[in-house]
Image (cartoon, rainbow, N blue to C red; front, top):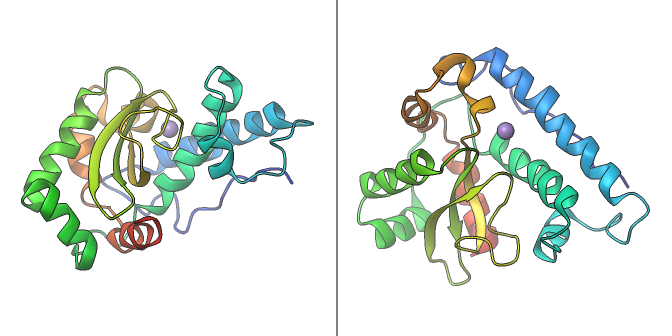
Length: 202
Ligand code: MN3
């Protein structure tokens, strides 16, 4: 069964002013749609065709650039839409909060580490918060559409929060001001969804 572009749980303008509607529309309907279609083309007729995206990425032949780029793009954006929330800031709580405090000392310490990973990823890529088996969390970044599910990529573990720092994610509204976009992202993180992913993966 072919992969399908997931619907957003909110309107394109729902994350305004932090992420503008035009960027959301192009990002979802053009970029993510492109990765989805190209992934389907790349796996058509192969033994990857009926596997889950997680299984495909965890067992990826990293030299298969079509699946690496488009499978990564499909998975990364599917996660990205879900870890944002138009309702805005929600309080971090529970076991995820404890794991973040254990790793980074404070929420501000985590925010600094995540923002630095996002700001210093050279060129296109992603910043991640990952959870390892046992519940330890770790911030890292990846180039292009790679992600930590892929063999040997960055910090490993399961990504539970991701931020797209490709210019297509912010340039219309923020131009070269990637740090302002990163700051704005913190206003729309859907912590309930991140907590759900933490609990499922730890
Ligand atoms: Mn993108």
